[in-house]
Image 1: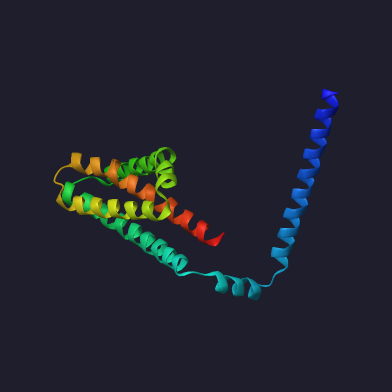
Image 2: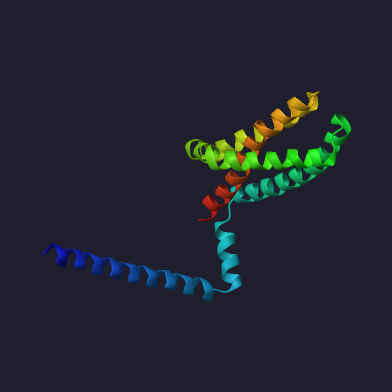
Length: 170
Protein backbone atom coordinates (compact mmCIF):
# COMPACT_ATOMS: atom_id res chain seq x y z
CA UNK A 1 0.00 0.00 0.00
CA UNK A 2 2.91 2.36 0.71
CA UNK A 3 4.38 1.54 -2.67
CA UNK A 4 1.08 2.38 -4.39
CA UNK A 5 0.89 5.63 -2.42
CA UNK A 6 4.41 6.63 -3.52
CA UNK A 7 3.60 5.75 -7.15
CA UNK A 8 0.48 7.94 -6.99
CA UNK A 9 2.52 10.83 -5.55
CA UNK A 10 5.07 10.43 -8.32
CA UNK A 11 2.34 10.42 -10.98
CA UNK A 12 0.75 13.55 -9.45
CA UNK A 13 4.13 15.26 -9.43
CA UNK A 14 4.72 14.33 -13.05
CA UNK A 15 1.33 15.67 -14.13
CA UNK A 16 1.92 18.91 -12.21
CA UNK A 17 5.32 19.25 -13.88
CA UNK A 18 3.80 18.70 -17.33
CA UNK A 19 1.09 21.31 -16.64
CA UNK A 20 3.70 23.82 -15.45
CA UNK A 21 5.77 23.25 -18.58
CA UNK A 22 2.68 23.76 -20.78
CA UNK A 23 1.83 27.01 -18.94
CA UNK A 24 5.40 28.24 -19.36
CA UNK A 25 5.35 27.39 -23.06
CA UNK A 26 2.06 29.27 -23.47
CA UNK A 27 3.58 32.30 -21.72
CA UNK A 28 6.62 32.14 -23.99
CA UNK A 29 4.41 31.89 -27.09
CA UNK A 30 2.42 34.93 -25.94
CA UNK A 31 5.60 36.95 -25.48
CA UNK A 32 6.98 35.97 -28.88
CA UNK A 33 3.72 36.71 -30.67
CA UNK A 34 3.54 40.30 -29.39
CA UNK A 35 4.80 43.00 -31.70
CA UNK A 36 7.54 45.43 -30.86
CA UNK A 37 4.99 48.25 -30.72
CA UNK A 38 2.94 46.36 -28.10
CA UNK A 39 6.03 45.71 -26.01
CA UNK A 40 7.11 49.36 -26.22
CA UNK A 41 3.59 50.49 -25.33
CA UNK A 42 3.51 48.24 -22.27
CA UNK A 43 6.93 49.44 -21.20
CA UNK A 44 5.79 53.06 -21.57
CA UNK A 45 2.77 52.38 -19.37
CA UNK A 46 4.80 50.69 -16.65
CA UNK A 47 7.97 52.74 -16.67
CA UNK A 48 8.75 54.65 -13.54
CA UNK A 49 11.02 57.46 -12.52
CA UNK A 50 13.02 55.01 -10.41
CA UNK A 51 14.00 52.78 -13.32
CA UNK A 52 15.27 55.75 -15.31
CA UNK A 53 17.20 56.88 -12.26
CA UNK A 54 18.78 53.41 -11.98
CA UNK A 55 19.72 53.49 -15.69
CA UNK A 56 21.36 56.88 -15.18
CA UNK A 57 23.23 55.54 -12.13
CA UNK A 58 24.40 52.51 -14.13
CA UNK A 59 25.63 54.71 -16.97
CA UNK A 60 27.39 57.16 -14.65
CA UNK A 61 29.04 54.47 -12.52
CA UNK A 62 30.30 52.70 -15.63
CA UNK A 63 31.70 55.97 -16.92
CA UNK A 64 33.25 56.80 -13.55
CA UNK A 65 34.90 53.39 -13.27
CA UNK A 66 36.29 53.65 -16.80
CA UNK A 67 37.77 57.09 -16.18
CA UNK A 68 38.90 56.06 -12.71
CA UNK A 69 40.83 53.05 -14.00
CA UNK A 70 42.67 55.13 -16.56
CA UNK A 71 43.57 57.92 -14.16
CA UNK A 72 44.43 55.53 -11.33
CA UNK A 73 47.08 53.94 -13.52
CA UNK A 74 48.74 57.32 -13.99
CA UNK A 75 48.28 58.16 -10.30
CA UNK A 76 50.16 55.03 -9.22
CA UNK A 77 52.93 55.53 -11.76
CA UNK A 78 53.59 59.20 -11.01
CA UNK A 79 52.80 59.43 -7.30
CA UNK A 80 54.17 56.10 -6.07
CA UNK A 81 56.68 55.36 -8.84
CA UNK A 82 55.13 51.96 -9.45
CA UNK A 83 55.85 49.94 -12.55
CA UNK A 84 52.96 49.09 -14.84
CA UNK A 85 53.10 45.44 -13.79
CA UNK A 86 52.79 46.47 -10.12
CA UNK A 87 49.67 48.47 -10.92
CA UNK A 88 48.34 45.49 -12.87
CA UNK A 89 48.88 43.22 -9.89
CA UNK A 90 47.15 45.75 -7.65
CA UNK A 91 44.17 45.84 -10.04
CA UNK A 92 44.14 42.03 -10.14
CA UNK A 93 44.03 41.68 -6.37
CA UNK A 94 41.38 44.41 -6.15
CA UNK A 95 39.23 42.42 -8.58
CA UNK A 96 39.79 39.24 -6.57
CA UNK A 97 38.71 41.10 -3.42
CA UNK A 98 35.58 42.37 -5.21
CA UNK A 99 34.78 38.75 -6.07
CA UNK A 100 35.49 37.52 -2.54
CA UNK A 101 33.40 40.23 -0.90
CA UNK A 102 30.64 39.69 -3.44
CA UNK A 103 30.51 35.95 -2.81
CA UNK A 104 30.66 36.20 0.96
CA UNK A 105 29.34 39.29 2.71
CA UNK A 106 27.70 41.78 0.35
CA UNK A 107 24.85 39.49 -0.70
CA UNK A 108 23.89 39.09 2.94
CA UNK A 109 24.13 42.86 3.50
CA UNK A 110 21.99 43.63 0.45
CA UNK A 111 19.36 41.13 1.59
CA UNK A 112 19.25 42.57 5.10
CA UNK A 113 19.41 46.30 4.29
CA UNK A 114 17.48 46.38 1.03
CA UNK A 115 18.36 47.72 -2.38
CA UNK A 116 18.04 51.45 -1.74
CA UNK A 117 20.04 51.56 1.48
CA UNK A 118 22.72 49.19 0.16
CA UNK A 119 23.16 51.35 -2.92
CA UNK A 120 23.41 54.44 -0.75
CA UNK A 121 26.06 52.82 1.49
CA UNK A 122 28.01 51.58 -1.55
CA UNK A 123 28.15 55.02 -3.16
CA UNK A 124 29.07 56.72 0.12
CA UNK A 125 31.87 54.20 0.77
CA UNK A 126 33.14 54.60 -2.78
CA UNK A 127 33.20 58.39 -2.48
CA UNK A 128 34.92 58.25 0.94
CA UNK A 129 37.50 55.82 -0.44
CA UNK A 130 38.30 58.08 -3.37
CA UNK A 131 38.54 61.03 -0.99
CA UNK A 132 41.02 59.13 1.21
CA UNK A 133 43.13 58.29 -1.85
CA UNK A 134 43.90 62.01 -2.12
CA UNK A 135 45.71 62.00 1.21
CA UNK A 136 47.64 58.73 1.20
CA UNK A 137 51.40 58.99 1.06
CA UNK A 138 52.80 55.45 0.96
CA UNK A 139 52.17 52.16 -0.80
CA UNK A 140 50.95 50.38 2.35
CA UNK A 141 48.04 52.81 2.65
CA UNK A 142 47.33 52.43 -1.06
CA UNK A 143 47.24 48.65 -0.81
CA UNK A 144 45.06 48.81 2.31
CA UNK A 145 42.45 51.00 0.64
CA UNK A 146 42.56 49.11 -2.65
CA UNK A 147 42.12 45.72 -0.98
CA UNK A 148 39.53 46.52 1.70
CA UNK A 149 37.12 49.43 1.43
CA UNK A 150 37.19 50.06 -2.34
CA UNK A 151 36.37 46.48 -3.44
CA UNK A 152 33.75 46.23 -0.71
CA UNK A 153 32.02 49.37 -1.98
CA UNK A 154 32.19 48.17 -5.59
CA UNK A 155 30.76 44.81 -4.60
CA UNK A 156 27.85 46.66 -2.99
CA UNK A 157 27.19 48.97 -5.94
CA UNK A 158 27.04 46.71 -8.99
CA UNK A 159 24.85 43.84 -7.74
CA UNK A 160 22.51 46.35 -6.14
CA UNK A 161 22.09 48.20 -9.43
CA UNK A 162 21.27 44.91 -11.15
CA UNK A 163 18.84 43.89 -8.43
CA UNK A 164 17.09 47.25 -8.56
CA UNK A 165 16.45 46.92 -12.29
CA UNK A 166 15.15 43.40 -11.78
CA UNK A 167 12.93 44.50 -8.90
CA UNK A 168 11.46 47.39 -10.89
CA UNK A 169 10.84 45.42 -14.08
CA UNK A 170 9.23 42.24 -12.73
